[in-house]
Every structure is written in C-alpha cells, then in structure tokens.
Image (cartoon, rainbow, N blue to C red):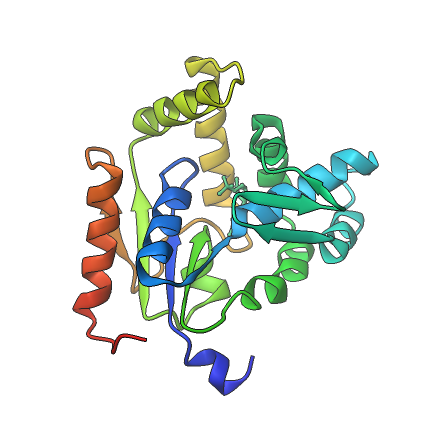
Length: 227
Ligand code: DC
C-alpha cells in the first residue's frame, strides 16, 4: 500500500449477516460518489468456486488457492465469476453458510487481503464486511458497526429471498443466522467484532434512509474536506 493510497478515505461498515450493511454501504457510496467493496461477496465467490470445482472444503490450502486465483469482476449489480454472472447464485443460503465456514481459514483471509485493499481508489471507498475496521482498513477514519436484532435480520432476509423468487422459511433462516453469527464472532482469526474506535449503529427500528443518513452525518461530522 503506498502513502497516496493511505490518504484515500475509507468508511468501514462491519456487522453481522443481514444487518443491512450491503444496502447501506451502496447508498452511502452513491451519496458520496465513492466506490464500494462488498467483501462478503469475495468469500461467497470463493465458496461458489469451491462448489463448482467440487473441491474439498476441509482442505484449507486448496480453498486458499481457489481464493487467490478467483477470476472476478464487479460491474454494478453484476458479479462475474469466470465469465458468468453469479450475482444471484452467491446470495443463496448454502453458499453463504459455506462462505462463513471457509472464512474461518487464516490462509483464505490472507489470500483475499490485497484484493480487498485494491478497491481503495480515489475519491473514497465504503467497505462492508466483518473485519473492514479491524484488519483490512484499520486506518479508516470512520468505522461503523451496524447491528440489528436477529429476528429483524431474519425477517429482512426472508423478504429479500422471496422477492428474488427463492423459497424461504423464517424459522430455518433464524437458526442458520444464529449459528453463522456465532461462528463469525468466535473464530480465532479476524472475528466479527467492533473495532475499538467503531461507532455502533442499531438499525433494528430504523429505515434504510434513516440509517444511511446517520452514517452520512457521522462522516460529515468528522469535517473532512469534500473531494
Ligand atoms: O456479508 P456476507 O453475509 O455476504 O458474508 C458472507 C460470509 O463471509 C460471512 O458469513 C462471513 C464471511 N465474511 C468474513 O468473514 N469477512 C468479511 N469481511 C466478509 C464476510
């Protein structure tokens, strides 16, 4: 990372699954004219590539090799893996659950580190994930830890899946979400935890617009000059 890269501001938005990070990150990035990193998509893409290659999910080095070699392109709402748009496929619950499992491997996290940092381009980056503020962009001037209670998150995910035409069961989603949260929070490497200097925003009872506004207010409160 060069000095000039380090001067490009980053807003890190971390939090548990389905806390609304993705939507909020995209909206904040749009409002500021910045780029956006959906780091969870990289773990999901690794999981999908693993499934497609029928590789062994228990083999940490093999999974890390797949992560390192990912042929990926993000283009608006499209996510290309090996020339195919897999934006919908990576959102499937099975892919998300496998992503959470392989995200516990230090070698996989290391393989994806520089790829994530490369998204830091002028005039700024909004990065969403679990360890944006703690590991990937520890110098981010604004770190938001976005939470929402698990029932609210499961309901949101259920609605999202149904809108996209997938079948979804609220009780199963709640169960999966609890175990995924537990795994993401308790893994030894880069667990889901608020950075010491993060500001917690609870979106359980906030609309998307209200949550976006809170983040934008926090950013403008820091007094950075406009790009
Ligand atoms: O944000 P998401 O649900 O799309 O992420 C999918 C999984 O990837 C999540 O369960 C944990 C993992 N992940 C991670 O470990 N670190 C990140 N920065 C982003 C996601």
